Length: 165
Image (cartoon, rainbow, N blue to C red; front, side):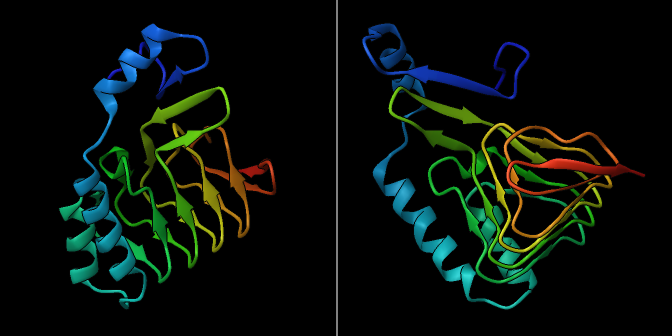
């Protein structure tokens, strides 16, 4: 999906009929969302294995080679096909990775891309439309609400750059 030079699209649904028509294009089947929910719930408790990665690929998540996905990870149920994880990356326990978010005024749908050789610390939250550069590190319990440049170490809520490698 192309979003006019951005990684995401904003759909405003307060007093905007054109935008609601745009949302119809991105709306998902309730059966597909429920299937994704079942797969993600099952994978939460599976140990690290190729079966777990295969199940995630089944619902559309793009996972590279040698990716480590710990237990109790929560991926977006609705737009799981917009999530990409690069080769040799590690996702820490209890991390949350989303491709959409909603507020009172809008819905934001975006491609979430985690680059190669990235370490995502446990209990971190990665918001929709974020691109994490290659060889980056995200500290535990961080809230990633904007894109991260390659070879960067970040931490905090919201994230702050600690240093560049």
